Image (cartoon, rainbow, N blue to C red; front, side):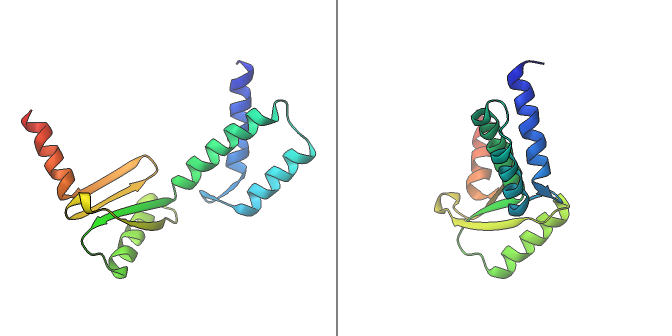
Amino acid sequence: MDKDASLKQFAKKLAELSQDNGLVSPEKVAAVLETLRNKPPRKPKTVLKHYLYYIKQAANRSNAVIEYAGQINEAGIASIQQHLSQNYNRTITTSTVENADLIAGFRISIGDDIFDASVAGRLDNLAKSVR
């Protein structure tokens, strides 16, 4: 295993230690950073760069961005959040962004997953199938 790969693995383990039930824990992140400050690893900038990458990935896996066109009510957002939390078997937080380009409907992005229930998405799929 090359040296950079072992630093990546180390950073990944630190990121895993920074989570509590799949959620990034600010207290655990603080503890990891304090430990790194007191006992710096070899190439600390490289380790911290990889650690930040893994922490961002973990945080994105628990945050859903709901883009919508038209109107969406709080009950609808709460229902989506509850459904996502059940599907992913962890607490999912949501944020909303109005996007008129969707024409109608919504698109949900959570980590690398995208659920598109918008008119624009359907029109795009239709256009791709006709080509």
